[in-house]
Image 1 (cartoon, one colour):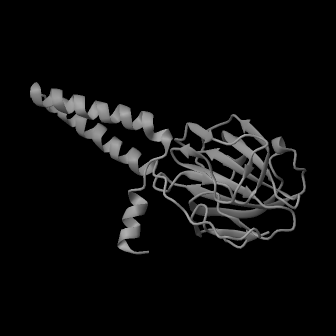
Image 2: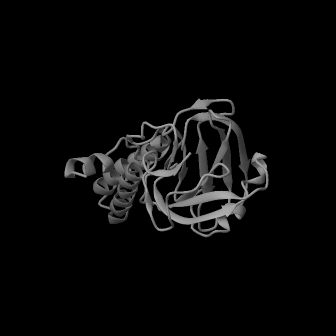
Image 3: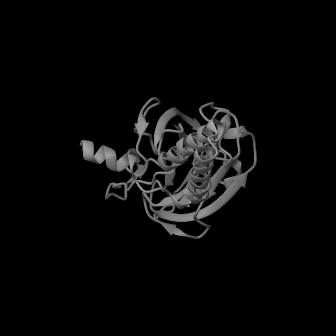
Length: 229
């Protein structure tokens, strides 16, 4: 990646979900800095500096770069940026009604420094969406998939097979955003939501499909091939 491409990634426009945070922190920065200078109050100036730093963090956290998805219908791409923390066989979430037979699950942990936009792993139709309230444990822990707040989606592929994507809230995450609905037709790499701040995204592959990634690998949402379908 060239230096220019690196800057484009960091300076990518923010997702619309950033708007309230940017407006609030931006206004707070201007007001506190102005009053701090006018009243000669160091405490207000420091508060303005802190809110300015938070403004910059929000710009970085909510960045929404463009991605180039492989032009192939026979692969599943990463639904999120981050580090793969586990690859194991396990039954899909019960709330999706996909049966109890174990399938390969690839769990990707997103730190606050990763791009947090979720993307569809393949083209198909959103069959079911199931929100499940829960705890806010460290998303890198294996039990987070069962105990944490989550939003699960099942996706029916053109050939009738099904896979699932689960958005899981993390230690400091307090909102899961999902912008698709049941019955929608989607394309591979298409944006479908995000989680703030720090989270995890699990991909459940169709029966018989083997993963091509291992724990410890770094994923690029919408680009990295996780499996051949």
